Amino acid sequence: MSKAVRVGIIGAGSIARYAHIPGYQAQQDSVELVALSDIVPGRAAALAQEFHVPRAYDSVAEMLAKEKLDAVSVCSPNCAHKENTLAALNAGLHVLCEKPMAMSLAEARDMAQAARKAKKVLQIGLHWRFTSEAQALKRFIVAGELGDIYYGEATCMRRRGIPGWGVFTQKKLQGGGALIDIGVHTLDHTMWLMGNPKPVAVMGATYAAFGKRPEVVSIWDHWDANKFDVEDMGVGMVRFANGATLILRASWAANIEKEFSETRILGTQGGAYMPPLRIFKEMHQALADVTPVYLKEVKPHVKEIEHFIACVRGECECLVVPEQVLDVQAVLDAIYQSAETGREVRLDNK
Image 1: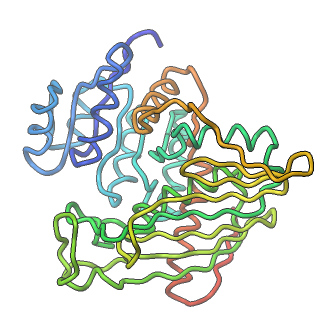
Image 2: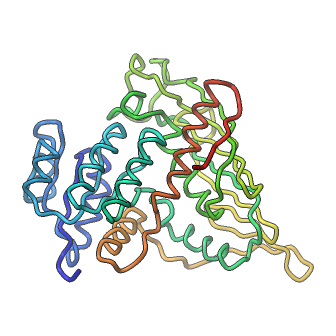
Image 3: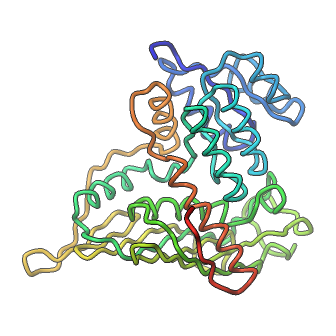
């Protein structure tokens, strides 16, 4: 593909504003961002005017019908990921769909099947894979420096960070709370570093310790406690077919010192922790700490979009393929199910 990739964005919310629009506009030589759409009347038009995007629509179908697009970003709420992704794929377009892939594993499977049928790129917006530290650690792991990976920890914890905008706190529109919003990032990131082993069993629990209490302090715009029906913290343990295990922790609100995200990987020949990236090994009968330095600073959302465009142009293979993300979705579904039943959930992996 020699001409510029013509792109439209579905959904004119915060992730479009702060990530997708700047990401596409940073690639003016290879991308033409031509249109935005949003079902809220006037919302797309206002954002298009702010960022000098040529056209705006209050209907996704109208944008797909009138614009000669090559690809779209799906930045709508989770409840519309499947619908908008299928509409774009059926129109012959490549799709970058924001995380989480869908509201459920069943929806995600439908999306993956549609992408295979259409023979189009379906990349999921899990941008943590594109940080310099994650890319560096992945190279160490692929080279065998950590040996066989048998354990991982995936953590994303906020002291006070319940979203007060959008529909994040409404289960029917989002599918869940902290787990499906921010837990999905650290879960995907850690499973990818572990080599995407197949999950076979999951145990989990969820808590709503803060969200239903209107007096709780918020550092952002305050949410509507009366509409809060999701978890503000979730935990899970995952067992994989290769014998490895993973612990997941994700919270919007917790009584901790400050927010933090961390990943820990343990292997037979070494371990790793980030951020900052440090690798721990036994070398020449001595314990050694390895700290990669001078890693190039990148904006992961920009790198994610650069990669998507390169995939659309046929210049590389997609790094975030639906088949891997289906396992992430399966784990999230299973944590919610385990939290409801109090029992371990077995996965069939079909």
